[in-house]
Amino acid sequence: MFFLLLAAAALVTYASGCARQQTEATAGNGPRRIVTDLAGRQVAIPARINRVAALEVLGYEKLFLLGESDKLAAMVLTNAPWMLKTNPAVQNIAKISGIVNKEELLQKQVDIVFARFDKKQLEDLTALGIPVLVSQPVSVRLTGSRDYAEAMKQAVQLFGQVMGEAAAQKAEQWCAYFDEKVKYVTARTEKIPANRRLKAYYLRGPGALSTQGKNTNTFCFGELAGADMFVRHTGLDGKGAVAMEEIIQWDPDVIFVGRQYSVDLVLKDARWQNIKAVRTGKVYAVPEGVFFWDGSTEGVLLMEFMAQKLYPELFPELNLTADLKDYYARFYHYPLTDDEAAKILSGLSPDGSRLNSLNN
Image 1 (spheres, rainbow, N blue to C red):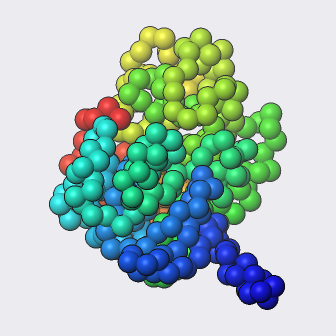
Image 2 (image 1 turned 180 degrees about the vertical axis):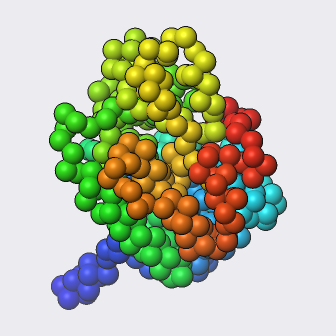
């Protein structure tokens, strides 16, 4: 009996990247495996995944990145500018806005749900018998930009592990690319003394005082790009609003405007006219693509974009057009034209507009 117990214990778990899984036989349901999600929850899921629902807004882009978007039965509604252009089939995927209709979700017969960390939603969906994985980094488990960078890789690896061997291999390829880009940028920016780092503010929208806090893509990539991000000096973790008085007192050197909102939010607002970034012409529209760069895997290019805008003298050879075209060909299997690349880097939609119609 002793040896039987030892053998059973040895089969309980094994580690693979950031997620651990085990395969087990479940009567009537076929083979199952245990996957540890980004909240540290162990969830039993089918060994083979055929249909999924992405109830967190970043899920679609990761599945598209890994070549698995054809398995999406439902996803969160979003107006990401280059999503439809790069994958026309996305228009056939059911969109979910607001509260999830549990009956409709059951009718989709999905094998797995990717979701953000929302205890009530997790409880409701689990009660339906649908395996739910938290697939966004959980901020309470992170301590800084380097931790968040690792969590981004873990999120991609989780999607890869869940979706199968081919997807897992693509996830590792993306992680290697990510590491390469971080090393390239930080080799130059980490040498900048703290008192010489330019102060940067990210305008998330829809209002000029809406931003993203610590433990977000923009904070992580901004810090890696060498910026002293405004939100480091606030108590804000996720998205939220700050006070104009705080902005005036801090006086950012550079402002990045995201989510296809207009730079006029600050350029044509009298309250911002004495802010250094406005006075010196350093207010930049952030590029946006398959998803908004403040949340997608494309955010690794946001790091390069921010670094070059902040410290052009440190990155004279950086060719963002070439890097963008390479990224789309390599990971999205979409060959960008020069015109399309130029539009993305200007934060424009395929039709040349810059407008967030959902104010999200």
